[in-house]
Amino acid sequence: MSEKHEGMIVILSSPSGAGKTSLVKEISSKNSFSISISHTTRKPRINEVDGVDYFFIENDEFKKLISENKFLEYAKVFKNFYGSSEEVVFKKLDKGESVIFDIDWQGTEQIKLKNLKYKLITVFILPPSREELFKRLLNRDLNDEKNAMERMKKFDEDVLHWKNYDLVVINDNFNKCYEKIIKFINSKQNSNFSDNYDKSEINKHVLSLLK
Ligand code: 5GP
Image (cartoon, rainbow, N blue to C red; front, top):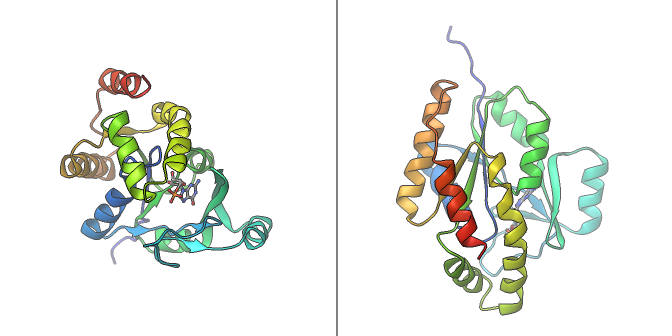
């Protein structure tokens, strides 16, 4: 009888607008990773579907789930709460399915601190430039300039957390970025040894983003 293996946890984080959600979808569809669908108190955007992009819930319901210890991690991002349901994720991992998360640095820290039995890989995505980031944020929020500016302010704080991730990738080309992440996941999956990345190059890029 073959031995049963647990799945692994892959976390992708990035400041808002760096293109992480599309990467998560690509990794999931091409590599049979299951996406952890978060609960949020944020209102759905025009193209978002309840139960697919998020479980959209009210504040009271979110608080109830916190009090019942239903979250593996949760955090307040901007003015809304976001959380990952523990039971669903653990069931999948125990069946051998790998799960990919699109969560912020606060949630990543919480999961790291839990020292779970599952293999954990953390990836941080950076935008190619400040200008491109602003363009993407405007585009996504239907040219809501105020909202995009608010997210840019938050960017300066969020970007500093890149140092706590296993891999940091600049999303200047979607396919190249995807390939780098998959290569890293594969090397980690097969052993504890993994490809490294150029930290001084990333440091330089982060400084250019903060100018
Ligand atoms: P958005 O509102 O743009 O969909 O997401 C805002 C931020 O919340 C993104 O950085 C996203 O990764 C993060 N996020 C989404 N779901 C979760 C979650 O379940 N937990 C945490 N900690 N962050 C989340």
